[in-house]
Length: 321
Length: 299
Image 1 (cartoon, rainbow over the protein chains, first blue to last red):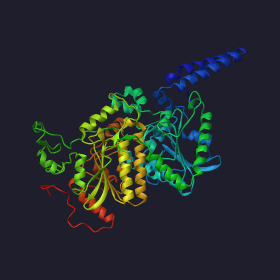
Image 2: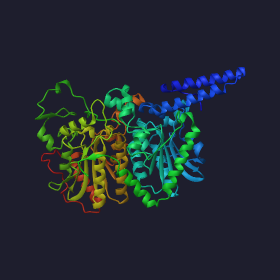
Image 3: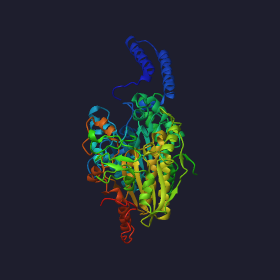
């Protein structure tokens, strides 16, 4: 991991981490035995992390989901998959770096992996557009999904975007049409599909690669119809009320599981995915293997029928059965 | 997704034109400034007889515009939104719903009906922008899905008239998922070769554009409508520059290949009829396609 970034509510955690570092330095310099003190501090650190992370306010989860050190699609790719061959382009206009995709192996089995990709630094973000796709990104994604269907391979998507890019070119080239076509296309693809929200699930730009048989969410990921900032600006007339909006929108992984939209919440280590990539990746790998095995066991007609039923059932109303 | 945009007139009125008028009898065209007798305007389907500017038309009037008189049957009339998240912003969501139900002339932001369009039996769903900015929540999504499933079951074409600021954020993730739900039903129609005609009116943005509104076998739009994914304000704030003249209008979308045609509201029924007759392999209608009223439409 590159530079360490800290969120406000992580201050107490950071302080203990620094204490541990100082103690280790001291021990090295003077040849002291600090094992007992170290163990006690590490216990303190662990329970502090657990306390902080179990009690995060929704807006704090949003901050964790956007954490600059959080693993992105290509990081999970390296930690979970092998034999990745990236495939580029929508065959219509250009290659959009804010969505990556290609063949990969999960436990030896070929899958089509597609995900939003944020940049790690300013330079990379110029080519990744901060993970906000243009229409060509969504069109590339659908092209790769159709290829997976054609050759009978499952599809795994990783969702991590603030949203589809709102810009002039995006509108000119049919941002809405591209998203809509993906939603319709994914509904009937005759192959198992799993989506995982690994960070931010930003509205239509997230859903455009998220109409799948199963929806998994990492514990500190969020998924929402609008960003808390956007919602606050419209309904509270002030972006400063984003913490209230984040709470009202019910956008955390646990919320979505309770609302019946997410199928599973994948636990993250205490301290969040950014504090331990390997353990997060390992939990994600286990979940993917388990859900893919379940879906592979279904006849494909049944799979597609159940997918339609799943989406038909979402929503609440009264007055008519 | 942005909610409710005021309809912008094409040209600014001169000070002399800004006289106060008794609103119940006369209405000023926001585009050419002509003073119109409200009754006449309504008979002309809210299209300015002088300049052709399309003022917004209430959803119930689209039912009259599209369906042959006496053939219409409305569905899910009693279906109402609930408050699945317990959503409170400056006002609780249930209060917003009650106010909209009092003022918007429909139970939610969509009317679903069946009937004959120039003798062709169709299913239709018409959005009501006056109801919380035509926003799509569970009720809109469910009514669209049911209309689509009726189309599928009865092999009748589907016509959806959109007018929406996007998803209804007070229903959170449920509102987002209505995009998937409606699109999944349209996928069934697509596979069964049942025609779906999408009509985009002012304004159609956000999650509605990015789901059923853009998925027509044929996408039609009224002239001068605002149509887009992101709202113009959001785009301006993102790119920090002014948007070009005519950006996100029907004409802009036609030029960029997103629409099949722009159709004057007064010809909408006859155009849809003619299209369906081509698609369904029916003979052309013999002059019976003219939309009911308008007695004095300026041709």
